[in-house]
View 1 (tube, rainbow, N blue to C red):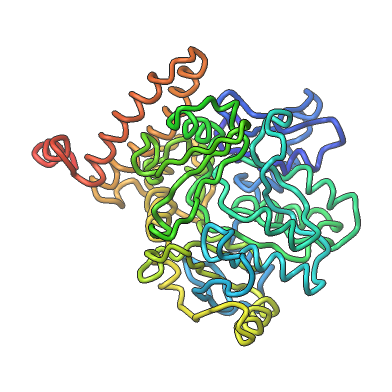
View 2: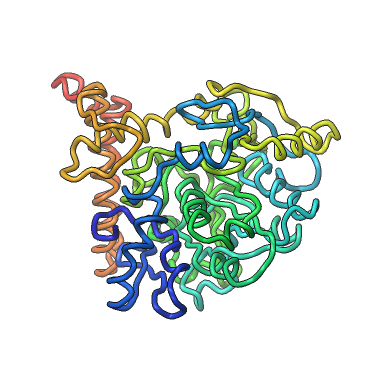
Length: 448
């Protein structure tokens, strides 16, 4: 799976290994990958085949969801099985202010603790000492509402679950776990194989996902703000401000010496999310945007009038009646604000991601010599010529951003990467938006 570029680095295979047999480490491109003894590598195949979210031998999201959510009558190709869907935000407390969107994901995790449904929530926190751990973010168990709130916000950085999953296997209790679609799928596959996890994981909370970034994205942000990545103490990838809409991303970096730096995403050489800089290669094989195997999923409401609000709004897909009842009760009490929406509304909020994971995936699968088994069928002619070129260019930018940054980092010459990235982004914008002189040339030559 690692050699084929289909390992997302979730840590599920390591969590199921004997203590000390394998660990998760950063590779040369800043992506977390499993590393183990020869014996572990020889014997890990049976584990990976059943529980790796990108294994062609594992059951797919549709089959998982059918077994997990028999009471969810509605099925939509975009959202998967669901009971209902909402758009809304948190009213009580500071959840909305602390979160990158409407605050509902952190609120839900806290509510599960507050109501006694779970004893702990596994989710991502900033590392207290990045220098010692070698990581900016990590999965951790929160057992109080304050700990949950401390982990609020978006993390465009690689993390892995091996530590918290091992705790769940070893320590009795009721747990919730928060994750992106492939991580939640890995958890659900593991629950099928491990009775203890099936009993102890009481709730899964999914986060809509565009793609996973490597750790080099955080380093690139630091470079472009004029600081050494080793001096970074913490990063807020999406800092809110009353003077700008929530979808105008602004990154803020706190340094070890107490200084802070900030920069808007869009002017950065790799700040256009859709271009695919530092995308994990496994993301090119994913067809799940909305965490279809999670009990409840949360994303950004990227449609008007919600997208222009600086405070942020969530779109919520609920797949179990008990969690729907929990949300409705809180809404009736005025603690949160929810408006029912249909699947078409939810799909519209994630239109670009769905194109990449459905139409784009069909194109990419058709170009593979050994394509993985996916719900999307290979179909190279499906997109328009312009869309085909955009998908090909996006995959190329993803692949070469890792390589060019590695060269620049090894030689300690930042401009190698920055000049390449600026040129790549200019070409991408010419094809995607047909802007400027290069865009005019693209039109004239019929390349777009």
